Image 1 (cartoon, rainbow, N blue to C red):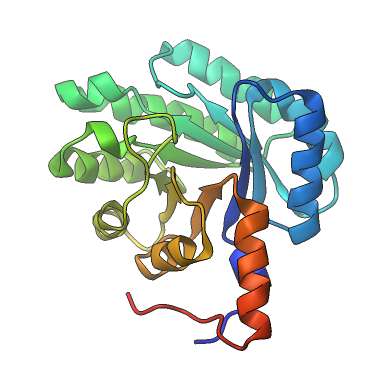
Image 2: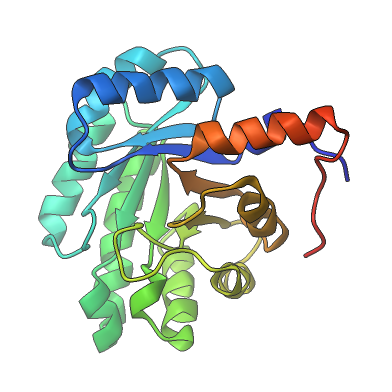
Amino acid sequence: MKLTPADIAGMLDHSTLQPFLTEDDIRRGAEVALKYHTASMCARPCDVPVMAELLKGSGVKVCTVIGFPHGAHETPIKVAEAELALAEGCEELDMVINIGRMIRGDEDYVRDEIRMIVEKAHAAGAIVKVIIETCYLSDAQKKRACELSEEAGADFVKTSTGYGTKGCTIEDLKLMRAAVSPAVRVKGSGGIRDLDTVLAARAAGASRCGVSATEKIMAEAEARYAEGKLEELNG
């Protein structure tokens, strides 16, 4: 099936999460997100007020991270972080599970924490993407983390923060897509730096990709579209 550059942009969460970024970098990030009309711009919690101002009325969703990058904040801190982000205009929250609790098998803790944040987000009309950080989990744990996320009402399951030992893999995307119902979408993140990887992620069942290489990916999409060669890959 033929695709357009807009189809690709609609999959991208333009990410500006590096610790060294300045407000000028965030403003430049917003310009990129607005230029291509990406699905969202995902920035650090401290950047939400300026990001919300810059994206207001554009249709590009305001997104931030919760418990990032290690997931080890105590639950009340994660909930408070989510509440503040929502109050400041966030429409999407990408939360990191407590990875150690997941590995230990404390499923109630993991599920209940996700549910608390989901309830806050849904009450504010926002959505939640649950980062399971696949690089630290066995396949069985990845599957179970996805199932717990769906049980807790999450809108997405997401592979990675990009700050673990390994990022997104096509195998993990396929596993995660199979682990949840069609009501839950899948997001790949971590190491997605070119159009071919975005297309492969799409074929594996991902609806979104977290990327910082948005300009490169979109330049590739536009060039391929001009050649009449921008199309779906076989899954």
